[in-house]
Length: 434
Ligand SMILES: NC(=O)c1ccc[n+]([C@@H]2O[C@H](COP(=O)([O-])OP(=O)(O)OC[C@H]3O[C@@H](n4cnc5c(N)ncnc54)[C@H](O)[C@@H]3O)[C@@H](O)[C@H]2O)c1
Ligand SMILES: O=c1ccn([C@@H]2O[C@H](COP(=O)(O)OP(=O)(O)O[C@H]3O[C@H](CO)[C@@H](O)[C@H](O)[C@H]3O)[C@@H](O)[C@H]2O)c(=O)[nH]1
Image (cartoon, rainbow, N blue to C red):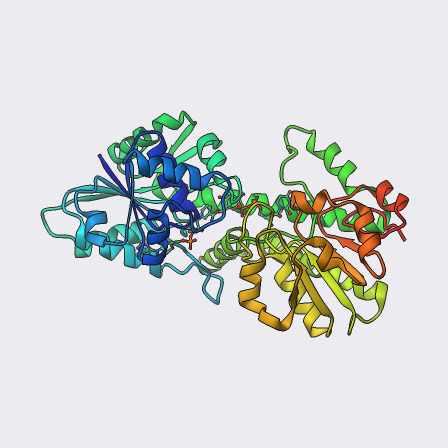
């Protein structure tokens, strides 16, 4: 059975590699020739622990093939998994142009009946739309069935999540097509949820929105703790032990970012508006997150007065650890606000600096290490909880900074430690050490 994966971003690449690792013959197709060349040399274009090794292993045993040739990708394919991007349009809706152009190519180049599976995150109704596009262009003697199979992996633990996911969602209005896709996933031995097309699409948006809601909720409790007293970590532990609530996604911080939560929540809100539904909770989640990203900046201004001309260090640029992804990261808003204040900004991140450099060039400085970035700085912000940053000794801040004033957006250090080291330390949802 020939399985083709369209798009070699996080989702397409990790899905293709993991499916080949459990024994399937996989062809990964991308329109980006540079990515394909890199992949054929055994290197992943994305930073994901463990991925290079799996790519090399499965190329070597001949189960994994990468191509930028559309004919090679689609001819003889039995099933095609679409995993192209669905980035946000200016109005918050999902941009479906990549999906639509993939659908047109599929209709043009398939040579036998096949199942088209959408892994990309798409608004409710899109799979039917894809089906119609394909149908319109398809030669009369061929048949295509449509399946929705949303993806739940997280960047940074994508391989682990694929092999150990909580569920595989397979939505189809055609039982047989759904069953074939279920069989492809059988080696993973994971729980399968079979639904109709529209429910599968909604499961993806509802899941991301609910996780984002948990984060915005705990961030608001943290903000209130700062006013009324209480320690958000103790509160989150106490709340999370209730099994009905669960302890995951209750880590208060500088707000959520990444390529998914902000985009998907906005897309769901847009969909609700289109159907004349006022999704009040979702709008609040978006609003709370926007304010949370600005919170430490305002606190620093309140504490220091003006930041103009002051050397400010940012440690951690990616939207979370173990990825080089900076999309919608809290660091981007912070850099922008600091530059508007005429602060002198120096940044450090274990892997995220090249992408930030592409955006900001010589408007900011780049430390070759956390210590170098902290040298002579008057304020430091921690925005990503990389192990390397969490493991810094608090002595480092004292030794390298001009004044050790630390704003920790990820609660990386214990309050007692900051107190013992004589740091001025502000974190999220905990009393300040002044
Ligand atoms: N990144 C994640 O962690 C994650 C997790 C779950 C779901 N998703 C969803 O999965 C989808 C893909 O996300 P991503 O981060 O992997 O995307 P991405 O934007 O990083 O990669 C998409 C790839 O598709 C290629 N492409 C575009 N049009 C194409 C076409 N017509 N034919 C072949 N290739 C084409 C691009 O060149 C690119 O390499 C999105 O809808 C996203 O919301 C992402
Ligand atoms: O308790 C928490 C957990 C997460 N975050 C932040 O939330 C964002 C997203 O984190 P995470 O969910 O781990 O990363 P993603 O890789 O964006 O994964 C999410 O988005 C993917 C794309 O849709 C889904 O597949 C995943 O299931 C979903 O977790 C990051 O900025 C985190 O710092 C918090 O602030 N507090």
